[in-house]
Image 1 (cartoon, rainbow, N blue to C red):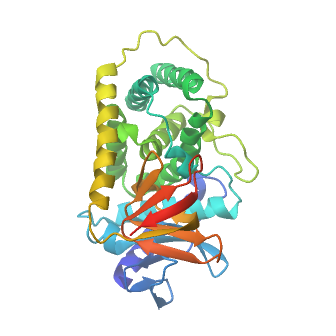
Image 2: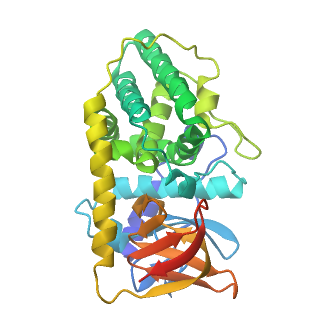
Length: 358
């Protein structure tokens, strides 16, 4: 792992951070596995502070961390440039935290995103148009497509109201970080940059269950949206501290709404996918509960940490696939549970747990 760490350090020296986002620079980082955590100047035993790929506060400083055991050495894609760009994504989260960014995703609220087929039909068309705008070389046509994308989104906002903010916030926090990481990848390898952006573009254009996972699809739509805006010469760099506007609002403030009556909605496809998604969630939860040795722990708990990319919700139940951190509201004890955990949520609450199953 030391050799890997040094290769990343060498790669980071090749990146012009200021050219990507003014004020942003390299942060310290840690690579870890289930036993050890590697820093530039030391190795420490693994502990529960190091979970997932993210930014954490370590010894009063924000750092980026990456699980190389599960998300590098075992993923079949051991590419130093890709890993470097992913760490820069997490470094940008450190930069956001240090600058008191407030526009982070409402992950637990987003789990309640409505299964409104008409809205999801429009969203899929919106994603396809964004993909087309990214791939368009004619700047006049590219701008027309972005304005169409913007217009459909404003129409959707009338359907789902404030829930649209969940998309905007995810695109802001994750979209900006992925944009920064991707532009760093472009400096390291033009070829790998093109391959990544084409993959993200295809995620938006080709229908799959990902289209219904708002948290995950916003990650890709945010990145593609920002790269497309950059290609159009739209300046969206801004100080993070005290900023309330989402990056979607910043980019579109000078765009105009255009006619969208010519779009053809794939209603049958989306309605079928919505039904299949509900059935899929039900099967996962039912299969989890079928184990005879499940233990129910009742109480008054608060969700204090989670993996947003690996959670599903159906009615008042949330299945956490990788880990969950719960705080006992009576004792204030915080415990992290690794592996699958099923939460029974208090009705009409996003973070209050009345029972969980292990």
